[in-house]
Image 1 (tube, rainbow, N blue to C red):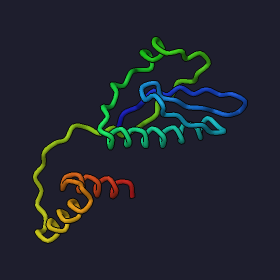
Image 2 (cartoon, helix red, strand yellow; image 1 turned 45 degrees about the vertical axis):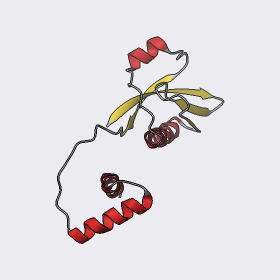
Image 3 (cartoon, helix red, strand yellow; image 1 turned 90 degrees about the horizontal axis):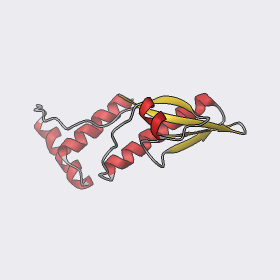
Length: 128
């Protein structure tokens, strides 16, 4: 799990969170705790969209690097956890032949790959 630097500003009791390494990814809330939680959700959704669109993920900068490069006047700096996809690794598995056939039919029907469908199922089981 990576941690992404976030900048939090407060104005008139409303907190806003942004991620300098992920331009356009923002959220707001009425409290500091809520804006961090909502920011984490927004960031995960943003990263997922980038991956689905085939966009390259940015190199994450440290808080010090962002402090030197960005206008952070009045901002609270926070580190927000996010799961970033890693490099694909080839694995060999054993599976019931009928389950494998069903997997292949499902992948073909959805325009996905066998590996993609397996990864999707694993991700779903880890969230549960």
